[in-house]
Amino acid sequence: MPDIQQQTDVLLRMQADLRRALQKPAQERRWVMVIDLRKCIGCHACTIACVAENKLPPGVVYRPVLEEEFGTYPNVTRRFLPRPCMQCEEPPCTPVCPVHATYRNEEGVVVMNYEQCIGCRYCITACPYAARTFDFGRTYTEGTAEAAGIILGQSRADDYERAANYEYGVAHARLGAEESPIGNVRKCHFCLHRLSAGLLPACTTTCIGRATLFGDANDPDSLVSQIIARPNVIRLKEELGTQPRVYYVM
Amino acid sequence: MLLKRIAYLVCVLAVGLGAWGFYDRLINGHQNAAYGSYVVWGLWVAMYLFFAGTAAGAFMIATLDLLFGVAVMKGTGRLALWVSLVSLAAALLSIWLDLGHMERIWKVYLQGSLSSLMAQMVWGYTLFGLLVLACLALTFFNSGRALLRALLILGLPLSLFISGAVGALLGVEASRMFWHVGLLPVQFPVFSLASGTAALLAAVGLFGSSRDPNRNQQLRLLGLSMLVLTVVKLYFLWADFSQSTYGNVPQNVDAVNAVLYGQYWWAFWILQLLVGSLIPMAILIQPRLARDGRWAGWAGVLVLIGFAAARANIIFPALTVPELEALTTAFSGPHLTFAYFPSLMEWAVTVGIAGLAVLAFLIGNDLLSLQRKEVA
Image (cartoon, rainbow over all chains, first blue to last red; front, top):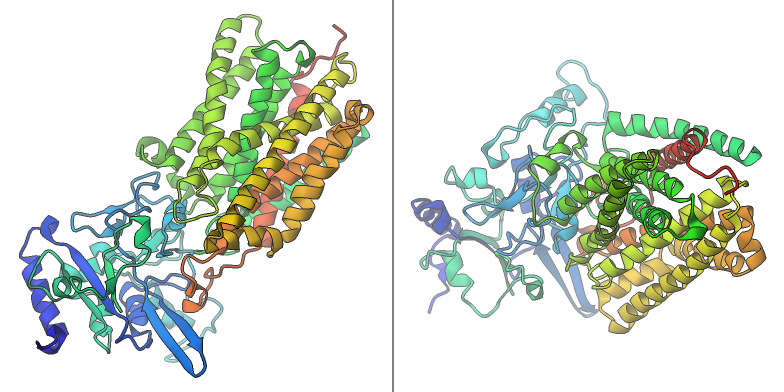
């Protein structure tokens, strides 16, 4: 039996899966991410794509790639483990929020309401995967040189840095004051703004090894639902009962 | 008198340093803080636990005089309530400055989540603050004694709840083995009572009225209570750490090792154990010294220093242990580190808040006739 991932380019297949899923009511979708650790080469392209897509400032990261080394010479192996938000079905981070600023939306994605968040960071301490970071209001251009004319200096680069991102479909310009999302907790949201436009998450489309897969697990014909039914799939810290929606193929 | 003048001077200097810290915090937000997205709570949260615990404990001590009518404690109730109020104000200021959006604090009251222990705690401490204020006001009136008793009866379980809730706030976090201890909500009210007792010991010993005929007896009673509570505290510490080490769950053992041998070893061995426990015990176990205002008062101050360090030793170490081992090197950037030592701005704010609290205590003690000044 041929490998289901070999039948067609998985990106094309996932895009077809996505179009099918978007035809359904939101509450009937079950977004799932699958990361094939055998294919991940540790290029960090997903991390950078996420930073660019969501205009993440210094110190805020949604999808770092953890690098681990096992064994001793000559039997040494490296493993690269991308770690997005696990979008838990039983998230420990949401009930602790004192103001309902973080919750699972109707598609089961754990989201942030930046205008509601008071920045207490209790949710960060509750997450067993360290998948949340706090926006301290840093900029990449702070401390860099000013430059006049056409040379790209702080004043020009600053424009890009201050431009709005569109997380959750809302424009959040970074104007330098303590305006949201500065002073808020931030996290991976499976690129909901891209999904609603019929696009796969930035990390998925950027993965050069096709190691990151995405789709609707409620659709039995989707690529992800076929892969997560295999026995060589694990989820992180399952013993905590969080029921993550990110699966790793070993 | 000299001590009081020195205390005023130190407080004014502390508030001056704090003013710079407040300015930096309000202008630059959290940018100059050393805490980050991994060690997410720092000195201000630790000081919140400390001041809030002291406030609840001081209230419990106040009930000895005002509710239970313990003869030897007569005249200390109003002073204890003032200590409680001042300490609570310091706690709330400390945690308010820690918020990413201070201006949204109203949301906790009007749009709060019932399931959040933090929201419950904010509501509880606000109610507690109002209750302490009302009790204090009522002590100045001869009428309203029945209402005062009713409020004190209500306040006693409330003080237990709010101090226990702080322990539960940490204890419910199943992913942090160091905090996820069933005993934590039980330990915290005991710690609160101990720090409240220490605060009263310092207040009565160093700034108490020398004309109060019961002062020596009060110091002895508070000192003996302090001794018992310190022994209980040390037992809790032993039970917690030995159990964690024996259980040998890596994340928990790492956190305990961080306390005992890590970057905060001195805070545990020197501040928490030696300064905050053993030296005060050595003083208070001697009846002659325990009845002496200066010795007993300074013993109380040392216990408070120990408790401040203990609160920090509960907060920081649990957060310096990575949830996933390879996170330490996965992504670099500002505020993405598992090492933490408070920044100058954080220290300045904390020193300022402590200075404000002690200054408020001194002014209240001078102007509000908080203590008995004549022979009964």
